[in-house]
Amino acid sequence: MKNIIKTLTLAAGISLAATNLGAQPALKDVFKNDFIIGAALNPSHFCETNAREAALVKQHFNAITSENALKWESVHPAPGRYDFTLADRYVAFGEKNGMFIVGHTLVWHNQTPDWVFKDDQGKLATRELLLQRMRDHIIAVVGRYKGRIKGWDVVNEAVEESGTLRQSQWMKIIGEDYLLKAYQFAHEADPRAELYYNDYWLERPLKGKGALALIKKLQSQGAKIHAVGLQGHYSLDFPDIAQLDRTISEFAKLGVKVNITELDVDVLPWVPPDPQVASVFMIFKSSAQLDPYTNGLPDSVQQELAQRYSKLFSTFLRHRNEIERVSFWGVTDAGSWLNSWPIQGRTNYPLLFDRQGRPKPAFDSVIQLPTR
Ligand code: GLA
Image 1 (tube, rainbow, N blue to C red):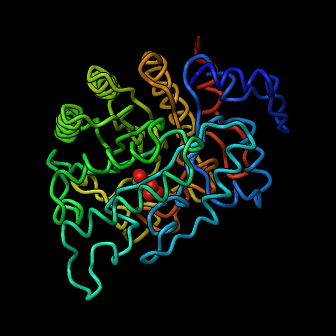
Image 2 (cartoon, rainbow, N blue to C red):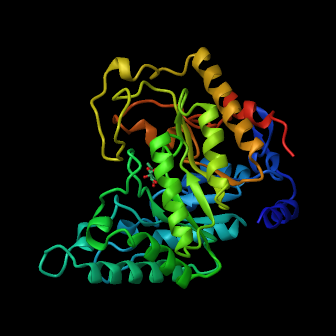
């Protein structure tokens, strides 16, 4: 895969970002012999209505993930009704720009409409009905983009913080083998697509252990899992670098690749201080104390963020033989989900590009690292 991307990059000529700060090397060129570099896109990027950010995406990234366009609620909002309008635009954008296109995500407990788990009478679906729905969905969605979307987050977030399997509707109605079935259906729909398991906080010992056991079991049952995605929703002090190092090595030892799939670094005070449960629906009230940088990020924190990114990327580079892709969750600070989660309307600074699309000190810190 790296070779394909390398050829594409060379064919396009090594690109230099002409920003008003002077020529900046493109991230995808800096890391071209280490891993591909991705970003999660929203429609303003792939429909190019935000021209500045769309240009930034083309300049710096050779892999893309759709933030929402391929989630169940977007492509399959009602029984028997599919809507691929945005997903088609997303895939076309990736193809036009020679990017590695990721499909996110097929089976998840969030952003999946309620009808999926109900029968025609509004009662809980049976195992057979839900399995049939899962298969229909996967065959339709993966099948539509066969050979074009190169890798799929087949199952997202199946493990709880405790390391046990999440008691989602998938689990409750189908049972544990919903996981194996999901990988089988995806493989059936596109035998050449890479299949991934994607989750957050796998660096935490209990959750990591649970996910390792899950992957081992799926492998023993014949599931074709190409890579595990560490989402990489990090902060200035989580995870500890030794923990991250260990996590990457442990998964790699199972014979899977490891991808960093949703990278961002939260710089704001975290609430609650040590949550046992993270959910995209967790919303808390804001206060000045919890939103301290509305007028800009102080230099000291800017530097801390730069050092943090430098340490994270040094770790990724040490594991370059195990890591195939590092993808950010968003393009610039302006569009990051961390401005609205877990508290709405805060001003966060989690990415490498600021609200105007200018590279931050964190960008400089990662491009200075010794690469291959
Ligand atoms: C999880 C999901 C993503 C996205 C983020 C928050 O990490 O995998 O699709 O919803 O949460 O935006």
